[in-house]
Length: 144
Length: 145
Image (cartoon, rainbow over all chains, first blue to last red; front, top):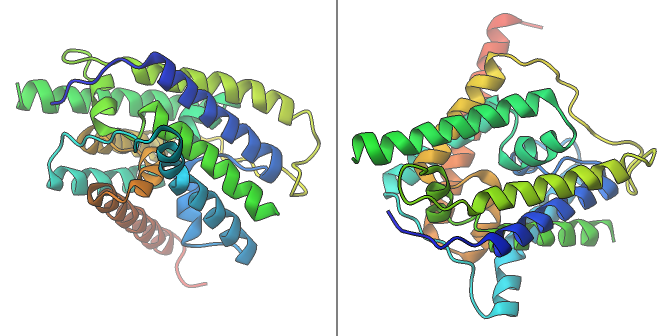
């Protein structure tokens, strides 16, 4: 377990930027800014132009840390307090879950709730509760 | 031109995720660890993103169509079923185990860290696994066409 500092301003500005990007994607491409949907569609594109816009968007996302580094001189902090098997198992479960659940934090939690989709409210409530329960069990039941 | 605009939109998202803390598993897991070393920062990410998108969508949906396309491509599925709830519950468990969600991991790939790459490969494996099981299920329901 690693203690992390409370960063309300950085987190709020990051959140606003995520919201601006989501709005711009809807304005220009008419699409939901869901990381799951953008990535999953890349493997089964409807057409060449469908592949191209997804690839361009993902390339922009991946360039984010480099721009932060150019401006601030530091790469964004990534601290991984879990084991390698946990990363792999967690990754697999995330992949299965977002496919069946049709979305993740960005798709349901931001874009879906912003358009007041009942499905997204249910999905977000369920995955937030599930993550809370999982962290509690791992840190305080098994690890406690 | 189109692709450049999409690249820049992705860049804004990637910078937002990077400075928000959403790409940092330590911060994500501490947000959910209310009984332990709680870090409420992520509530500000979600709140900021949600309010901005809500207002932004209100403005965008005043238009009849997006700039580059003929129509908005919005999800049409409205059913709240076991697939949605089960999938979301599963996703939450994985997020709680690894500390990365898809929107956090994809921009974090840009740091070149092996652990982010490993998580992303596993996640893509999970997406294919789920698709494969869905196509098997679809085949058993509707045989030979």
